[in-house]
Length: 420
Image (cartoon, rainbow, N blue to C red; front, side, top):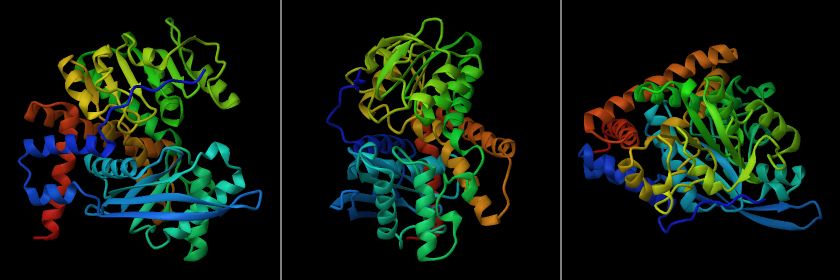
């Protein structure tokens, strides 16, 4: 079974970001000069990467790196390998990274990268040559004090190791040029589970504000990659009964609750959930519309749109993916009483631990996983509390409140730098 995605709308991904940004900017009466700066990326780099394939032929791949902002610090953001990568998407992801780092108070700006490629159709050697070519093309962009890439969809610790090595070959040994590396090359303990852990932490904060007991709650998780699988595991360990999960091969439901540990082991062994017997097969659309307390969309952008928002029955949405709810769906969900922990807060666990990886690389001193969690968890809890209090102050949704907090911090930094 091939999983079906939600119907698309005409609004661009970057347009979705701007819609929400402008709503927050209006509420805080942000001056036009700051609005104009924040609403546009600082730099858009387009590269063409000639790569020798295993059969000896040459293929030229299109790649991007968008630096949205460096006002709060060096830009930070992942690199995505996917056949549907486009400039609009990368611009939006870079903008969200600026806001994400700001909302949790990290000394980073935002960036994102992408290459138009289907990594499943490439050999390991071809992916290595592509990654090294991308690194060489951006050698004067990347740097521990300028722009720090990380994994995203289609990339992982292996690709980050190649970037680290290629950059070090051109300049000098510098593990802090990239995060999400293998532990053996200066990676951080706790990084792999960090984004999923952030989903769990912010979900628990929201349930507490809503007066809901996790032991009496049900959930559904769309997407069973790194974020979704760890998020589902950690939510289940908090007592939440996960009724449904999905990946690109299909969606599965079990009214008694999916055995998440078994599902994770199965996925690791088989490479996907295809053939999983721990639940009945349903369509992806059904998963998004299940009558559960918590819905975690942890797959792709624009999965909940104006076309299906009215069918969502979850009380709480925790956005594990970037932009899984389109801007044109916000009003419907809000009018139906659905609480949303927005992506720039809910999935900020990954960049928070990436920050600690960068700190460890620069100090040459490394923490245990317990120490990492003890440092990262309060950052996320504190950010949630700030967003929640802002939502009460402005009588707005958590999403708009998160944009207000982040936008305010970026605008203040622009003013303090004395651009005007």
